[in-house]
Structure formats: C-alpha cells, structure tokens
Length: 516
Image (tube, rainbow, N blue to C red; front, top):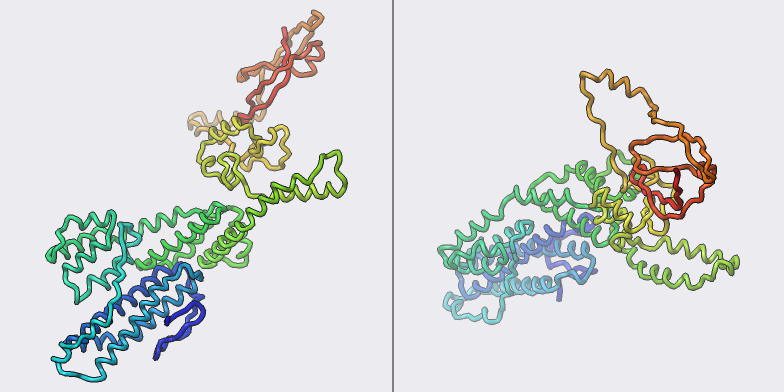
C-alpha cells in the first residue's frame, strides 16, 4: 500500500499536513524539492536502523524514541515534497515510485518497532537473546553521485553530510568506503591517492571539500551560463533546454544566498536582449499596460512560447505530407478552370506556411537565423551568395536581383540589398586642427566635377562624329550608351559578363561594341 498516489493522497495517521498549493511551485524548485525529499528519506532510514538495533540493545532504546518523536514531521516533509514533485512533473514516467514504496514500508516498520518497545520492558538478558533483527531487512542507503561537476556539488554535499559524514553509527573506515563509492571521474582522482583507512578519511573528505566548495567559482559559472542563454531559435527542444538551463542556474544562485528575487529588472532586460525580435514584440504587446514586467511574467511568457513550439511539432509531418502530394492535383496553366485556379491559389498559401529550410545548411530555420551563416563576415556572405547564385536582396535562389519583387531593402542604408550583405562604409578620419577651417569649407560643396572632352568617333560608314566623353579615373572598363551605338550604326556583339558596381553588387551585361 502506498502513502501517495498521483490523483489521491492518503494522509499518515495523525498527520497535521494541510492542503498544498502546488501552483506556487515550478520546475525551478525541483532541485530543492528533491533534496528535501531525499533528506526526509535518509532520516527515516536512520530511525529504522537505530530502532532495529534497539530491539536487541536496550541502551539504544532512548535514542530510538527520540527519533520517533520526529517521525510524523519526517513523513510530512517527505509527503509534502513528493506530492509537489508529482504535480510539477505531471508525467508518471518521471516519478520515482520505488522510493515512495520503500518509504511506506520503512514508516510502518518504525511504527511496529515503536509498539514492540513500548508494549513491555523485558529484562536486559531477554533483550540480548531476542532475534527481532532477523525478521527486518534494512533498505539499501541511496547515496548521491558526484563526478566533478561543480553545479552538482551543493546537492551532493548536503546529502552526503546528512547520510554519511554526520552519522554517529558509522566508523570512519565505513564512511571512507561510502565516499569513494559515491565519486567518479575527476572527483574520484582527488581522493584516490589516500589510503582507505580510518586515519585518512577526514583528510580525504576535507581535500574534496576544499576542491569543490567554492561559492565564487560556482556563482561565476552559473551567472556566465545565465548571460550566455540564447532564445533566438524556433527549435522546440533547444528553446526548452535554454529555459530549463536559465531556471537551473538561478535556482543554484538562490541556494547560494544571492538575492535573486531582487534581480527582476536585470534579468528582464537581459532576456529581452536574447530573444527573437518577433517574440520580443509579442511580449511587449502583451504587457503594454505594465510599466516594467516582472521576471515571473517574462518567464511565464517564455514557458507558454516553449509549449506552443512543442505542440507545433505535432503538425509538421502532416503539413509536409500535404505539401508534397498537393501539386499533383493542379493541371497546366492553360487548362485551368476557375475552380482549379482557386485550388492552386490555396495550395500556394499552404506551401508558404511550411517550415523554413535554410538555403545554406538545409536545417529547419531561415537563412537569417542560420548560426553558421551569421558567423561569417560580410565579404564571406557576399561570396556565398555569388557562388550559390542567390538574389542579393532576398537571398533566394529562384531569381536574380534584377527580377526581385520584394519591397524590402537594407535596414541600414535602404539600398537594394539584404541587410546581412551590408558593408559598413569607412568613417572619415578626424580632421587636423590646423586645417579644420579649410576642410569645413570644402565640405559645403555637394557637387563632384568629373573631366569631360569632345571626342571624334568613326562610325560604321567611316565618317567622324562628335561625342562628349566622361573621364572617370576610378573605372576599370569603358562604357558607351545604347543611343550612341545606334547613332554610329554599330552592331553589338553578344556577351555574358558581369560588372561590379556600387556596393560591390554585380550587374549582368549581355552586349558589347568596339569603338575606334
């Protein structure tokens, strides 16, 4: 029989536990709740251990009775923490039912021992000859595990101290073996050099504590991870992981006695700088009537966003399947009926709602969210766009710049290219104070003069015609207008070349002429 169940809870006899408002707890509180549950479990293990000894050793009777006075408090604390964990997780697969069942068994065993000891008081000789212990099997002590991850140190340190280090019934040799068996990896190498004897336990234990009990290092690591938390992605798993990591680190900082509850403004501002602009706009619209939203409000909004992303993944497969089979229904353009035209239009709308597929790495995100593409320099992005024959304005491969119908332009300079391909123009150097007046005067001129000349050009019939030529010393090619070619009677030759112009943008040229 179990003390607790998912939907119905049986209170322990005589328990004064009140109803628990589980809505006050979130996933951020799970580490502290698990520690509270483990500590209550270990105290009951200790009470059962001493009670079993007291059945055959009358000198332990008073010690057991002292433990028994707190048995209801221990049960209440376990019940309180376990019930909240059940409701917060809300998933039977994540529940440790074995711990719950062992706790129930031990609770009733302790009660049975108490009634046996208080029913009668036989002589000490009878106590010594009794064989009660053979009928009671002690549960195996659940030890924490520590591999050297400093973020796991607080939970390991508290649990090991309560269960092993502060125990009055274990020898130092036994404590040493428990210590070694609970360590692995880097943490094990710290104590591995000490001989496993009674005289070296405290030295090994203190060396381990000195190595990992560092509030400064732990707080620095947690805060760095808070600052590096990024929500600029639409992947459901990554978004959920980022949110869990943020709450985990803040929970650890709270256990280190940092005033996390007073950091709302700093945390809110930091999170707003780490989320996607569209998500930030949605958050601002939701809390437009709030002067400054609290951290709990922002966290609740992000949690809802995470759940929405997770639910959205259920329809991805169906949407892709419908997009793949739908085009087969549409006939050719010349044979479409009005009904077929409407159907084709609806199919186009469906296709535009399919998940993004990055044109650079083929992952499920847009090119503007691709971490690999964003890490490249502007020149490297331009080269990628040129090699893959993307449109320089919308970064799509279905057309070129001259055919782009997008109404969007660069957000920095408003020119016809994508913002990710924008080159920053070099800033003018600070003028020399001695000539500042002269330079300031020259800045007033807004017109640049280029040299021109009247030149004689021989046309197709051998006659000379006069034209005005413009001399641009920065140009590496010569150009002639289409009207001049017609006036001279030349026949242009077909070519296929590109010329780099303003903003390093490439423009195609299809004809050329030879001029004498």
